[in-house]
Length: 369
Image 1: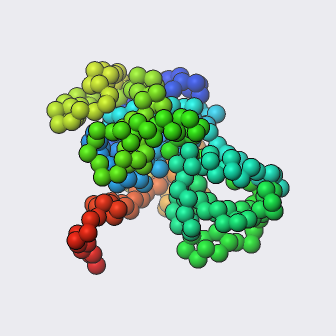
Image 2 (image 1 turned 45 degrees about the vertical axis):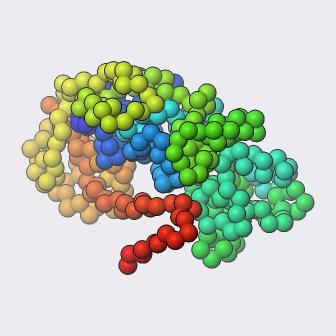
Image 3 (image 1 turned 120 degrees about the vertical axis):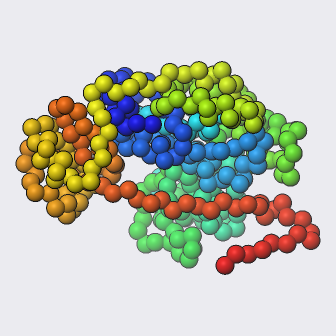
């Protein structure tokens, strides 16, 4: 994946929000570079996680990625801006949920709710009812208190009710279980799986329970996405999909080792064309690059003004500043784009190698320090 090629492609492409553009890259590192390039051109990028599944895998081992997937798709389908969906190749080897299954519940201060209807809806949306909410996707109903940690945000909320009227909404800590003092006007709740009604959810659950896959637990959390059927779409064919680079070798390897639900022939897609105007630029000394290209239009990218002030640049004259947290460095015969932002090492989440409720009597668990 080359940023100069994508930059030119997006620069000359259809920028309407109705253009369902799907950019297919090799991995999450390329996905971030793709998002940076799209952001520079004022697209709103939505990145799907790099889901490296084999057919029939227990999806509980990939819960973090599955939640990221739902959050990204909900954001994409509910956005009215110029948008683009970005996906690593392996994420697209299975059908993904249709647009219609990404609704939102808005709960407002002083509004009235039907408690039974809310419980039923959250159950069909994949929320787990627990005594104490400690992570995303959980909800607790305790008398006149509702605790919920919805996808789409990083905070859990506590709703206090008077009968069925919402008396207060506050953020609460999942560590201390104490709520903050500040009142909130409203919150949005999105599905943890799909926004289904009871009939749709029941049919989906029954398909999973009749699964022939070798899984210790046959429920929607474990196997649901393998049985989407009419609830899912082949994104490769339903979107305007394009490869950011040739992926012939990757596809040959994948289909020689596994049998994905998406046919290999569906990946006969166009590739982003070679760039004619821009080249990628390695910026070691920004001052030297600026000096040697002073006759060109120069754009500096920085997360904020403090990065500009601390950059030790000799001059700021005749420059255009773009304040975005992205890294794109490009050059052409008449333009230079330089990012002053530095790469951030993202902390990898270590996956669990075993699912706890699959342990049997007599099994041993070894803890690492």
